[in-house]
Length: 216
Image (cartoon, rainbow, N blue to C red; front, side):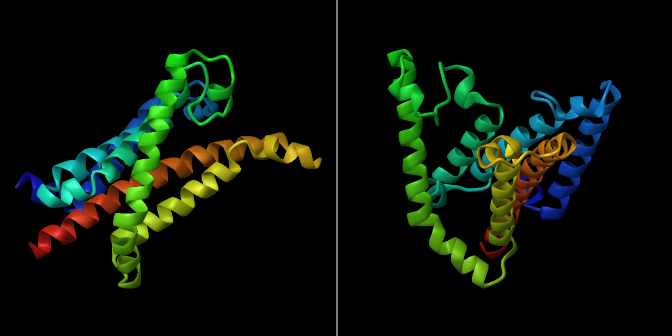
């Protein structure tokens, strides 16, 4: 019964929307300015990580046996994304795991080994994603299934979010200066887009589980 409820897209979306709205409103009540809502460690950023984590947990909870062994990389990637959202990739090491200077600089050997281990795990997960999950995802897109399309839109949303993140800094070498107000709006937009992408990935997991359980 629990699995059946968790695999209902509308029910899960209603819960996610309610929790998101209530959390943001609670954060608003304790904020002096709107700017505080978009800072690290506040509701919007925390919710992005939370929904990615919930998506990973649901993937494990709603899949069993062969399917879980074949696609274990999916919840691992979701978990890594949640950790990245909380800056865990650089919070505990001398530099960011994705930064070349962590491995070429004077960072402690332990930090370099941890970074290489995480990168190796990421590489394995991405390889498995392309080899094992991509064909089914493309087939689902061509058949108009909701879950693959949610993943696609979520991916595009994340690309847009990463593009506008620090856009002013990225354009400086080209002699382009953005208005300060525009930069602030883009920064806020990036956080909102990441939250929307996380919710879409969660819904994709639920929609996929709903379809799979319906045919079993």
